[in-house]
Image (cartoon, rainbow, N blue to C red):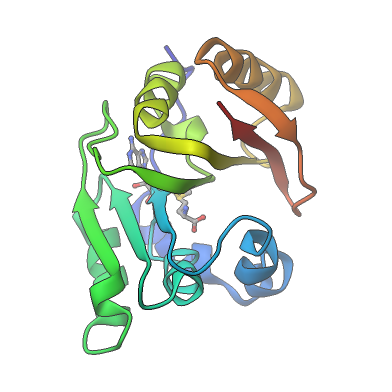
Amino acid sequence: MNDQHSVCPMEKAVSLEKGWRKWLHHPKKILKPYVREGMTVLDVGCGPGFFTIPLAEMVGQNGKVIATDIQQGMLDKVSSKINGTELENRVDLQLTPQDSLGVTTPVDFVLAFYVLHELPDIEKFLREIKTILKPDGKILVTDPTFHVSKEEFARTLELIKRAGFTVISQPRIWFSRTALLES
Ligand SMILES: C[S@@+](CC[C@H](N)C(=O)[O-])C[C@H]1O[C@@H](n2cnc3c(N)ncnc32)[C@H](O)[C@@H]1O
């Protein structure tokens, strides 16, 4: 089991979309190497949709973004941004339980940004992702440097390997400990 950090509360949703983030976590720059038009992408723990909206733009009209969260309030925030826009039909918002992935659709790419440290059982979660990841599919996981120490992330990397994933690279992203994974 994870040495669990608390789940990011709704009151902090606004801090996930602060101006600094758009500069330092420019979503399309971070995601460009992995996301193409027509893909089905899973945004696990999407929060208020900082990455969900750019992902929906990147997959285009033939692609799909499945955005999950355990807090309905987060999903409502995403919903309020896309309702009535062309992105509405590209995004499936799913309220999921804390102890399971809750998604069975095959996906090309998974983003788990600032989420792993909040999961009750990282290895179990990754094993579930493995069952829906298409061949050649990749996962980008990140944890915040201000919550997760180097040592803690090293333990997470061990769990990642135990779940059957290989770390292909560790892209540099501000304030983030990262790993790009494949099966
Ligand atoms: C720190 S926020 C990050 C949000 C978003 N990924 C971002 O980078 O802006 C973490 C989010 O993960 C969600 N979360 C926590 N545990 C989860 C789980 N087991 N399954 C899905 N979402 C979860 C929280 O509700 C919260 O919205």
